[in-house]
Image 1 (cartoon, helix red, strand yellow):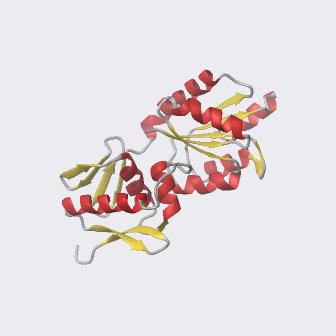
Image 2: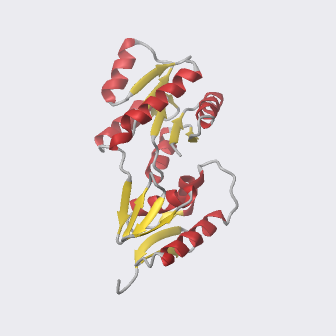
Image 3: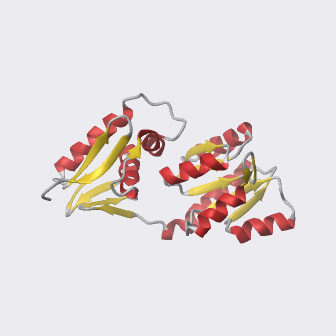
Length: 227
């Protein structure tokens, strides 16, 4: 399922954009500040970033500039009331892939987001790996050698997030956000149940990797001794 991060400080606008994209089968997280956006981008993988400019803690272009300096090529659409030619030029030169001025039609916004996803799909990495594990995001499949097993959407996002942190502990909140979205209503044990299922699948595949728990903090991948 495609995932979109919406950085917009007007709640009604954020909710309307999210609803329009969710109706097209996309998962959306919404945040109102640059600080929160940076945290979400560190803990989850997004297919598109929708970014307002006039935010409580600064201009959205400052976040985009940081992402591009780090060579992060997530497709970015600027949604803003700043529609002067100079504003549009500065947004595109900073690294935005599209620039849509408010007010706008939701149908056009959705079409542009879909176009960004299609345009950038070829370079999005499909496979991730850690030790003897390999994951195909497109196929939602976990591999150990020639053996494979299918992952649920939440399991896929959890294992990909753990892989990206390369053995470092990932906090529970970050894993829950990656698997179900920041504002999803899930039970306190949902993450533990998903981790239990993933451990079972690692066992079926006879992987040399385990998922370890740091009590009260989160989870990490670890290579088992003598493997």
